[in-house]
Image (cartoon, rainbow, N blue to C red; front, side, top):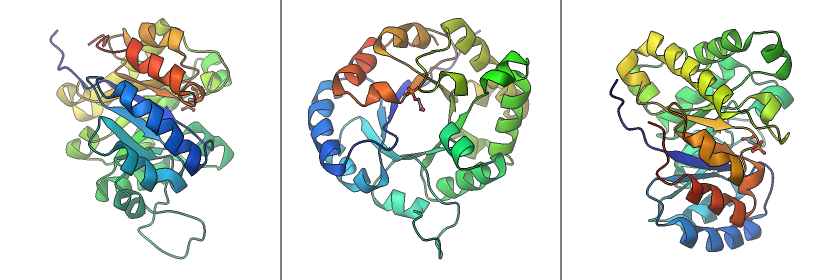
Length: 259
Ligand code: PGA
């Protein structure tokens, strides 16, 4: 089978860590160490650091994104930020449907879907996160849960719209727990996700979509995960907070793509 070469995207997610000053210090060290990486590197930073992070990475292969956004274009939503505000900062992407948003803030697939559409309208790349809980995996519901999340979060997207999205598979049981999925489990699940995409949008398009794995990725687990045929990138939380470990992850995965 001949596969189209997909981009390889390593992404960091800082969550609610790092002040704007710390973000600048981090980027001043980080960017020079990854500028020679042949593929894009993404960093999802807190909203207050978007503008300065974009400035600090301008003209490089490091792309800045937000971790969430509101689904409306604008309005009386105190404390929220919109897709166009994120885009106006010069950001490239936005994480949507992260499990912390789903579980701590009750975000459901229909809301994630509205956010995906709004992000696309604002020319932001949605990184759509899905993943099953430990209980769901134990009850053999993984395939069903992921299918449901994909169906809901990506509902009615055209092929062109889907082709702009990245899908991040992050099993909830692996996030922040130190319990990374084995490369075999991750590959099996990624392949399931790609088959689902193929059944809805066709095989050609499904082969082009970048699928990331996330959940306790560390420098010593990154390469084996990236060597899997359907894993095109990583979404890294805790290990992206230290320049050294995130640089190691980026370097370890250079040109290892399994596809
Ligand atoms: P983790 O987080 O790498 O700390 O498990 C991943 C994520 O939540 O995106």
